[in-house]
Image (cartoon, rainbow, N blue to C red; front, side, top):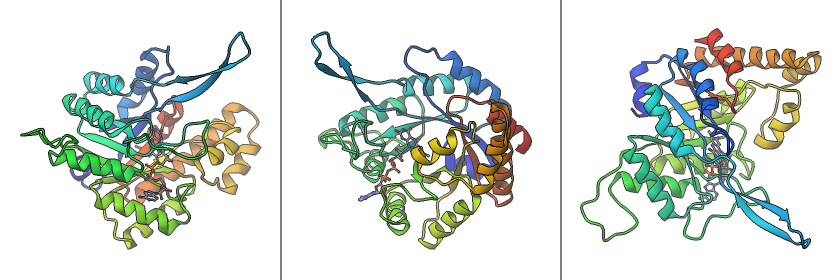
Length: 318
Ligand code: FAD
């Protein structure tokens, strides 16, 4: 079922959903199932599965030269989606990237998704590969999430890359896209970021999932700005319980979001790792409760491979 249909069916009740990462190459799927098992009691209508593009590594050879190798550390998005739908009978939503794919790869990926009975996808540009500063699309690839949204929306109309194919089946994907309450790091300002977000909605996207944030006021302002800009689609807040003291620096560095002073002070006061984790859980519970009061359609949690803290949050909130 489509995310937008889940929202309609809930008639204003806030639903629970979460995102998982495929395991590192060499690990088995049981760790993923263990994490999902813990969270099934909160009846998630969907589970997102991230996509991880290739990385470059340099290996020193015996002659002292460096060999550049392409590695894919977390493959398995498609297989995990199929396994989730099969085992838990809930919708699995793959993230689809521009980065690392040309349009033909994307088309074939989406055909596989359609055959698997997947009817939601999140369309994303992806980040630059780690060894590069700026994102570079593949030759004949999509440069922005907007272009990817157009490609998916075309397939929903039965338009494929090869114009000679006749009597094509129309796919029927509900399309999610990313939104940034604190602005995407590359956007020159918030107005520009909202301008392109609106283009994604006009191009065929159906709903927005936000980057994580730790200050609800940022989310409320973002929703207000979106509505004023004419963006009417559902906006799903993304939340992550802060889990370690190191994340005080890692989260702003990696996700370009600010942490509120009150949260930082609580984390610094905590004497043990467990106490820090509890601070993160309590903060996330308070955020979740306030967001529910404000009528958000879903609370979408970023599990990042560990679900014990999300379980504690969900138990307090749902
Ligand atoms: P876009 O919407 O293309 O925007 C990128 C930048 O370009 C923005 O600054 C925007 O303002 C600007 N822009 C957009 N369109 C245009 C245009 N036509 N001309 C000029 N400028 C433009 N990454 C992964 O690798 N795998 C994942 O699974 C993944 N999941 C994510 C899930 C969520 C909910 C979020 C919020 C992020 C996720 N990311 C993931 C990270 C994401 O790929 C990065 O944040 C990436 O840098 C931007 O992706 P986007 O889809 O927002 O890009």
